Image (cartoon, rainbow, N blue to C red; front, side):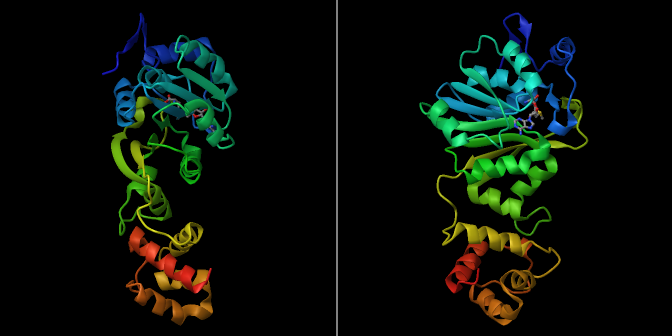
Length: 298
Ligand code: SAM
């Protein structure tokens, strides 16, 4: 367990110290930047534990805020880099993280940052790197997709996100929450829910419930694809209109005049044309998209 004191001072995440830091710096929260700071040491412990860090591992944090999570990462990982967009937080982070030689703060927008270069320069000597963050909710999906699509050499992604988004990421075929985000996340990772988090552990409190999710990044994909880009276009297309059948959605994507051919193709792939996209497994989507690639329809 992580100590709740740093020398003689309480950890940043204690509600009292958080309020003191915010007041002393005259900091005002920006809703537009998704600023909800964690003030619960147990939740921080759970997040850090789920990332399985040690002194040989690196941690990339996105949106450190006033450094509550950063401080615990600094005590657990070999190296920590935290990327924060809000200039006003930079001096606060410098104060809070003073003395942690293994930790650096980068001022910038994570969506615009060259993460490949950052990984090479900063984490080249680490045995593994994980992303650990309480994400700004307004950009959860773009951030996760950037991390995954760029194929960064990541071990785990442990993030606090909106509960509803976490459920979509981990959803199984046939469930209401299953959609293109589930397929994409499960293609790149193995997701596991860590815990559901009540909104009372933040200041200010967000309007939605949250969850911590852990994504173990796969070393090799779970299915063999002839064309990854076409796979994702087929997946997107299959979910385009959730009330329509797979055959209907596919003919909107592949050509209305191909309706009969699409039915035959689906049957050949052992997928009943009247099914809905949301019932298809990753393996079925792979089979289908490989068959479409063979036909040259996309
Ligand atoms: N890690 C802190 C905590 O747990 O208390 C703060 C988390 S708060 C939910 C999200 C943080 O992400 C804020 O500090 C916000 O300024 C920052 N942020 C928002 N958009 C960002 C972006 N595009 N790139 C980097 N940081 C961003």
